[in-house]
Image 1 (cartoon, rainbow, N blue to C red):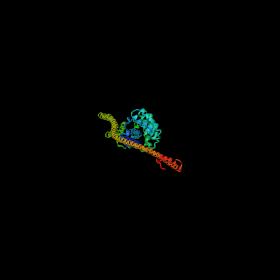
Image 2 (cartoon, rainbow, N blue to C red):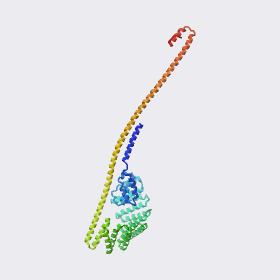
Image 3 (cartoon, one colour):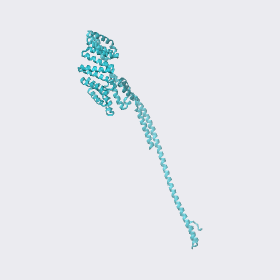
Image 4 (cartoon, rainbow, N blue to C red):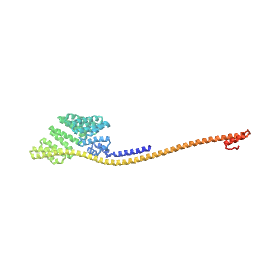
Length: 475
């Protein structure tokens, strides 16, 4: 049945080819896109997000470990681009996978951390903190001080959002300690933490500690050469001094922040800050100067929250000057902006729904193509199986014929052996008979000699014997 086994192996091979063909990656470049997105995540999160969005069928295009990493990277990219991650609950499946299968503490840390970010957007702060705590535990196993600082800083943000400013302060301090050990831009990371520490001190009413933190942060930002961070800390100092009534210092650091700002888009915001400062200082002429600049530039900005604050200040200024009609007009514009903010939030939700729909549509299109290809594969498989069965039947029939021929040949061989045996037996019997006759002849010759020698009645006896043996009476 050797040939029959070959036929079945041929059928099995055809089936395997068909199955493998139906499972081909719908997007072969998906692993490379994921890898590139991970490389760009820290420095260019917007580019990383575009790469992640271009992976339209991750479940089929990626192997399971890659797909689980995709789930984490997707939340990471969305979070860094300020997009909602509240619905990205599949990350919890990735967390379970990495904990049970992968065992890589870094991947587990990131999975828990961004799982905490998902719960945080869902405003489930208890579960968010549980996820952050797990991330903290696994981050300690990585030896990565930057990762530990990231977790601690965001734990501080979470506590701050819950109004637990003293607890948040301790987390920011811990984060600053870890960032102090960083091998990549430690001054910048420390300065960022000190800005947060200063804000917590302000909220706790500890102004001296707040100013100390801001000043130290500003020094580190100067050491790092990061102008944007210097501008931020100078602005924080300005706010702190303004709230404490130290307007001269507030103006000094606001101007310093303004001098460090290189983005012209931020100019209207500075006009607003200067106008608010001088409005609080009761310096109407200076306030009016920046209010006029603000009025001329407000429509050049697309920042809706800034515009809402600006219209609020303008309405208050007109109310102070008893220009109630103008004040009412600015209040109306403020309400229009607030309405636009609400619409934008709604549009963002619609965008998320549409993105989900587009993703499902691409999956549906791929499934249709896959079904069409599978249909032809099934037809081809049917043809292959029919051919294989016919081939197997042919092999079986040939095998049976070969078996019949072999059986007939064996029969002939047996018959030949029997004939040879019979012939050999007959030759033996004939030889014995010939030897017997020869022996008889010899005896007769001897007898004749005796009888010829002259015994009585020998003639008659000899004739009788010859007649019996030879059928003749001659001597």
